[in-house]
Length: 419
Image (cartoon, rainbow, N blue to C red; front, side, top):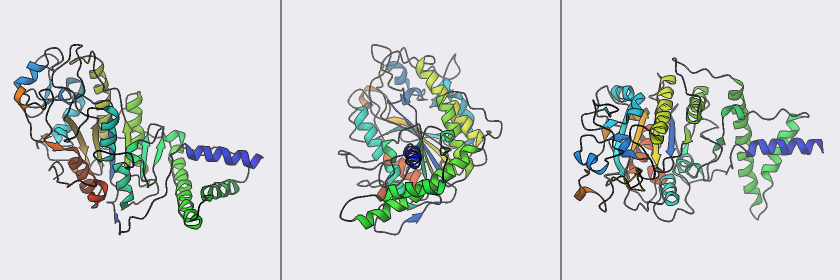
């Protein structure tokens, strides 16, 4: 009974890492990803108002639509932080200004796709799977990247937050953790080899007519799980001190970016890290330069800036990319907020998006905010398909040439953001 208790505790510890699935063969030779590259995807759940993040202060109609929540033009009190004479940052996001100036950070405006339903549930599914329409059986696009390429380590993908998001679900293995410090295997009495043997045996108990094939796949998965747990335990035992004088705020998003930097500096082959940061469904009292939206944006961008400073010297190998459900309506509503909209902004920091100092900070064709230029008389039109941005990140940064497998039923065209 003692051995059984030990086994159950160990199994529960491993289960907390993620619901693993064995990797299935794609029937074609898989390319090996670039060495030492990491993509950090930050999903801003709720639909962030991109027009108040990357502010089109050079478009006069922006101010006509937003009398109460618009960000003032640069130079005034609490005005936008100018980037190129037309676009600027929300003043709460000023910590990103030096990164835009150096070319480490770049943005895109008017990003979306043609079938937006304005539904949180449906649009998060679409942005996480990269599939239009019926997404029920679709894997996440990050998982398809893992499944269509060969990695250089056991722990290729980690979500920091506690739940494995749709974007990482599928046939390839991925970990879901709350923090690196939670990853150590429990200190149990008894024969550790016996406990691990019991875990391996449990992974292989798969009924069915193709039991031998299933046993082989599950055995490989068990081996990867146990090896991954060992590597993560070693990382967890080492105290992490940020480099280059970087200071993370003691809040949720600050600690999460710190954990991401810790994993990257551990150099265990992690190439994909996913971070969730919600609270962007600002229907009421969104505020302009002040308020809840500003505070949340400040926390996010300070965490990003601290992460870039911590990994200074490595940011060519690390790319951060923000995603969200959809944009918000151009016009503010009657409760000083914004409703579910259409196109949005994205921010890319580091990696293949790095340019030279003074390079173009904001990419994408600007459709304009005049009434006749709006989509359905209410929303920012999209001029860049979000799947092309994903394709750039996967192919140009991570080095996976199989974009057609990552983004099925889509004809990928580079945005030019990453050269």
